[in-house]
Length: 153
Image 1 (tube, rainbow, N blue to C red):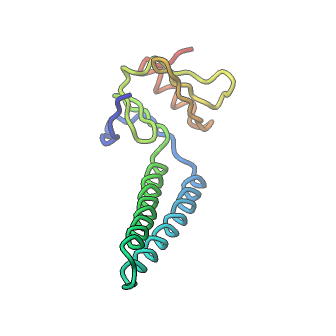
Image 2: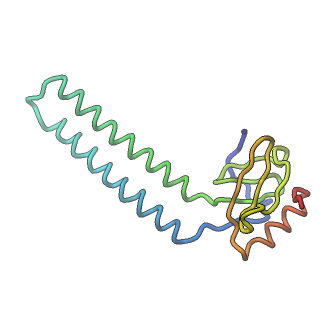
């Protein structure tokens, strides 16, 4: 699966907005846990620098622990940035999922899911993606996909 980053919004047709409560929830969850990880990394590294009577093994263990907390903080920053991307964008040149744009050549077709009428089913070769589309956005999404020739009945 080859994708490019979404940077050119000149050919944007439809963008599904993320609900505000989901954005606030992600910021609270990842932001709070990020602060805990950074605080723990700071405290461990402070102990590492201030204590003079440590053996080499103790220093290595504390350095590894500080590194784990730092890596945990980096992962949370990455997850927070990923959670802020729009879930679905439809362009003239392709379709984007969470900010990763796929060309239309890889998409076989799109239709509303059979058992969940609020879900858009996007068919690729050997796989399918499902996205919840708000009721007020369904007509715009279907019209854009029909204009691009990717709508299947």
